[in-house]
Length: 152
Image 1 (cartoon, rainbow, N blue to C red):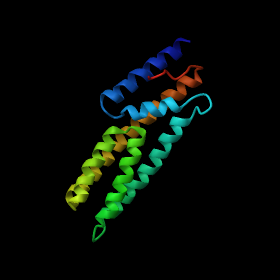
Image 2: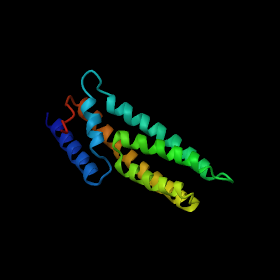
Image 3: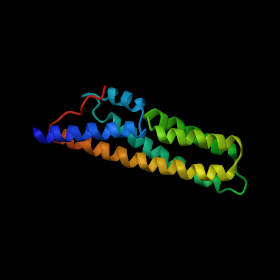
Image 4: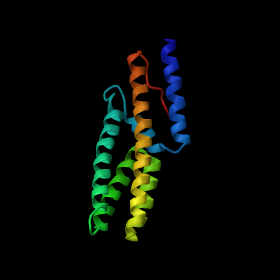
């Protein structure tokens, strides 16, 4: 049983760091509360959808910003979607980067938008990496016969 306790401690330390470093906010906690025996893969599924959506949105944003004439309404719409999906899983730093991005869209500032796209991508790939590690830890805990620690 001590392997489970070790994994659970690792999980708690890791998730605490994610909150401390503002990768995640309380919205992620809300998601975890919705996961139970009847829906054990809930968080994994929501996070996987977030990854899929985000990669599409990043590609759409990159394409939109490379147009001869940039349609800022379209860029703003993609950023708005990205902000919404990062908000819904509690990816705080991605959400914040999207908020800055929206400001440059409103100003129709192409250089600012291009820089923000890089920032959003950077924050997204950081949080993706962290969430993948978290999901791996969860799977290890469950595989070892343990339970995911309650975060509330």
